[in-house]
Length: 501
Ligand SMILES: C[S@@+](CC[C@H](N)C(=O)[O-])C[C@H]1O[C@@H](n2cnc3c(N)ncnc32)[C@H](O)[C@@H]1O
Image (cartoon, rainbow, N blue to C red; front, side, top):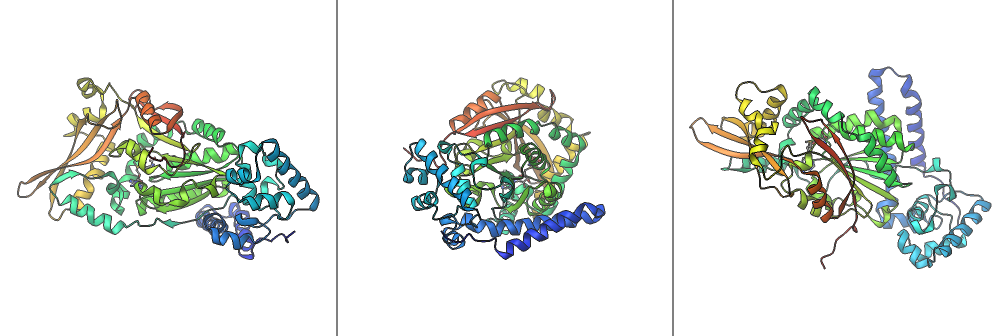
């Protein structure tokens, strides 16, 4: 049998540094803790990056694992002969009881047949990663307690840290925005609204308004977390937060997941188009989650390009983890075509992966425009808009008009008006289309659609999502009568990639 490998010295050094900071952190004055939290997260990120080579790169995996860890690499566990024999017998017994050949088990676990054979004959001591893969095969009925390790030895830090997503070009996007606001009119896709630091600051000042934050905080994230963990079972969880903004909701959710799971195998990936917002989000997440064992990764990228970001998606190497995609703060309802987004941008997730969305419900049926206009506060406020808007309303208008004011070549007046949009992709939904009416000094007028905010019929929405392969697990109301909103948890029913028949 090959010699078990020890943890590389770089990882040992990182573990020592992390433990030391964790120990001294609570004794430091509050004003020094922030810097230490950030250092802790950065070190965890480095540790994750060094561990993740084995997860992401087949070549490196082979060399890292050597003979001892098999092709999946990672450090082989150092085990005594008695434990190892017991494990070999158990593996063979469970495989035979499940009626699986070596080849079939290898296929289900995402390992090679030779690794399975070598693990059963004791030629290899198993690596942590190989054990995790075996744990993800339900037919084997393996429990964490069956594996030849202590649960506490599992290192949750298996992934990359900070990322600039491939092909992402914010400079090009800002130029496109400038071209568009100087054009004749049309729709400005919502991604462009958050990109520059002033837009990010305007968004943060909306998120800071007490009424807004109170409404968001009433979302039943604790109940959603309980059900997410039930569906995750014993697997590790990757939370892929699309458009986290200042990450208040996402961090609330991560806190619930970490406290209810009772273990730290939760990774939070923050993916945002806006660099300034991503910094705010990362700082908040790092400060809040650092001493609870969570791991946070910040990625500047475009969620419309998600299928390019392989590390966030399902792959056989990550079959031992579940993914939860979140799109909170009603962002889903701002997309041009929500169903096409699910169909095309969420294509890389696998059966069992989950999706969490918060959305506003319809104030009246979509086929009754008169009733909608009477009841929907988003449309009613237009009539009051001219003299006395609420502070929240004014902040929204400043946020929506900001890019046109900043990137227009000439000075313009911008007025935001809201109109009813009945041509929405999800059956039973309607939209409030915020339109910027732009007047130049010469009197020339142009009009841009700057923000869609859709309202849904819950049943027809989840029927439409089910047709896209995402089934409803549960939903929870929040926001009361004046802001009827729902949090939806969905689960992917189909395979990772749908092939055209
Ligand atoms: C309405 S805010 C929601 C913020 C947060 N999730 C919440 O619950 O309050 C939308 C967020 O999505 C981000 N965003 C918009 N378009 C994006 C895109 N194409 N790719 C990645 N992030 C995007 C924005 O920068 C912003 O942070």
